[in-house]
Length: 146
Ligand SMILES: [Zn+2]
Image (cartoon, rainbow, N blue to C red; front, side):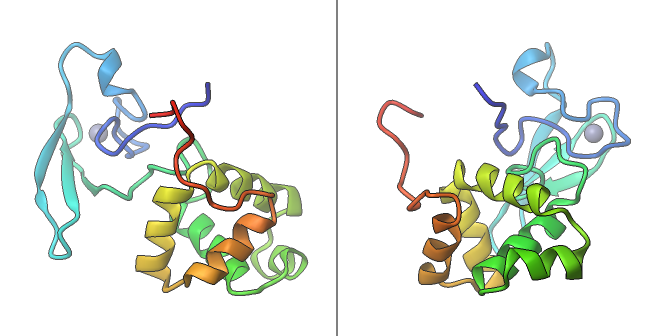
């Protein structure tokens, strides 16, 4: 099984000793809920490093070197009709890299669609076009997969 952590499961701060350590594997959780943002997004705080982060931080592209914003923006551009070949030129990423993100994104369509629609103003039809790249129609959760 691939690793896909839920928000609040780990600290997304690379400088933190608890970085990417899953809560479930620790005796004493270091992540606590810390209110909500103005938009109503759940906020968390790492007790170890004191950093605050929100639900969307580091949830999809867990363990990627490229910042999640950058990946999301690239995917958003793709959804808006940019070609992968031109994105490799503009952004400087390899085609394989972008396709890799897309494949990973396609496994978490629900979460990703929410972020892309809310933060990047991507429309439903554009998302379908995006998933079509990797042969995923954006189905909801598979049965038996919680
Ligand atoms: Zn931390």
